[in-house]
Image (cartoon, rainbow, N blue to C red; front, side, top):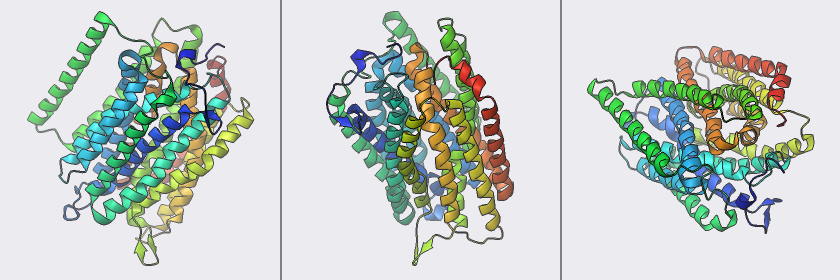
Length: 493
């Protein structure tokens, strides 16, 4: 059958995992622990950055901390692009995931060191490690199914449950340790979680067969040496820029954040241009890439709003909500667990929904639903902010309701987007296209980090209402052009 995963890459037959290949369990658990470490650290990052020096925090302004948070998230997903290239051309997805997990764990252990420098050094390692792991583990999930199988979306939805199981547990542990005991102890808990993930991946490797064992399009001989030389020169250029900024006295948090945000957008534009101008693409592949540009824009707009949960909404939880229950003030970061637990509940329901609907609801329409719901969540957030005007503390149920609406939007867009990427990807860009999908999050977070600075200068109700209505309008526009986008997908549903 055209579009099937190569037979040599299929995992060995045997026991199943919720009716899916057993290999899905290994990838599910690896991703669960990786997300435990990522979301556990992320839940307390902005709170640590803004905490006073007397409370062992960094004492950054909220606007700067929000921008750091957004840019960090952007860099995590930006590095998925070279991470996909490393898998496709050098070492394969299997080893990329392994080495990525090791580097991520090292980054979290560095952040556990009780020193002011450790947070940025650790975040740098996590960025590189996640770039290797994140796109390639999703590509391996895609290899388990035929390209146009209706079970494919269901498989990705189950995989998505692993992401959110780790994301649910993590803030409860790291949040308590970080906010109530010591910030670096919370970061250390994230390190332990990633260590579990690496061990599980190694032990479960026998379930994977040959999936991801070899590069899809390996570089050999002179081509390999030439590529590695270019990588070395790029690294040297980055080092020169850092030195120049330091010598000029411009190596500040704000300067670096702004520069990285701009790089994220420019790299994305450049990479899309490179693929679209590739003469080796077939007519169908080129058409599908045109459709993918639209899906990418919709996804970036979605994440611009959605990922402010860990920054603007997290600070709202810390400063504007009444978190006292029976005399115990629970950590603000615990509210970061609301979103993933709702996804755990909703993911199987949406998996069943997409299986039942089959090809009757197109991918562009699913994206449009996600955008509209995401916008409505910020409209509701505007009402919550309005209730908090004057310094009153509001019920945390406002945030629970906001996250519930966002979850419905996420389940309409994110797992569907993962699946659509593996289906629309040109053959020669298989793993790199998954990196390109994560670039949508990178662009959304990079711009969102800058946008979040406005939360300090605009009134909170105006801030939330403006961006909420903008997302709703974009979603309605996506519905209007859904048929044209589906036609560009050239037979892919």
